[in-house]
Image (tube, rainbow, N blue to C red; front, side, top):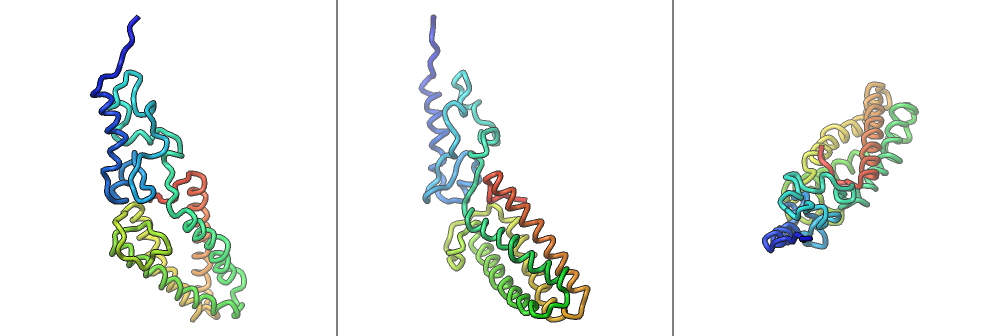
Length: 226
């Protein structure tokens, strides 16, 4: 009975497969590789990759990983991206539990309740300030996945992942949400059309943030693209 053994070149190929992640020097390059994950300021292989998943029964490591990355067929744990999960979770829940219901109540239910209208002005200013700074920081630094505590830090490394979705979100808040909120404060007391727009905006906000919160919680992927 004969036993097959892997050649030194095969072991060298396996070693390179798991060690190439350390060659990436910044988070943006690391995240673009499905086999790698940025953790503790360094690039390492994604959890869930192991010898058996990357190497075929014959020991040929070049056949163990597809061009799209072996993690495509692994569990959701290998594909999870929970960076800033707490921050994004709070944003989604804030819209689901407070912002959207307030807009729906003022625009759809209590259209003549004047005491709540000043709140719309405050929210419009907060929206312009926060999303304006967010868009400015992301465009200047090229980093779209930063923490709230670093909103004024303009020296971060590039991280373009999720940029299309976040840019669209920021622009929608600046060009549509904030103007509608402010206009509803100014003219909404006697203008049913303005209050109708506020009502529709609140309903859309509730459905959108409800969906992204459900998707992120169930998949573990908090930084996904459109």
